[in-house]
Amino acid sequence: SSGKIISAKASEPLLSSLERAGIVVENCCRSGECSLCRVKLLAGKVYQPEGVLLRKSDQDSGYIHSCAAYPLSDLEVLL
Image: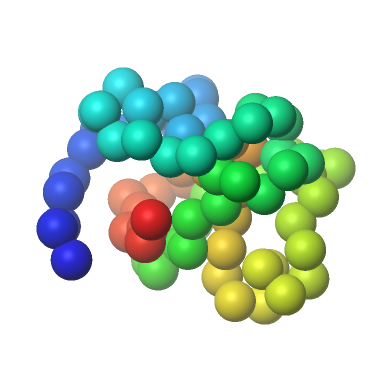
C-alpha cells in the first residue's frame, strides 16, 4: 500500500479530489452509473445520493462510486 494522503472536500465527489491529487481513476459517466470509478472503502463514511446505481455485490463488498461519493469523514480507500 502506498499510503498516499490527499485532501478531499465534502462538497465535491471523491473522484474530483483524487484527480486533483494526480491520481488517475478510470471513469466514464461521472454520475454513478457505469461502475468504472469504483473504489473499495476501507475506513470512513461517505454520502452517496439516492439513485446511485451500485451493484448489490459491490455494495456488499464495500465498494463505492468515487464520482458520486462525498466524504463525511477521513477515508481510507483501495484503488
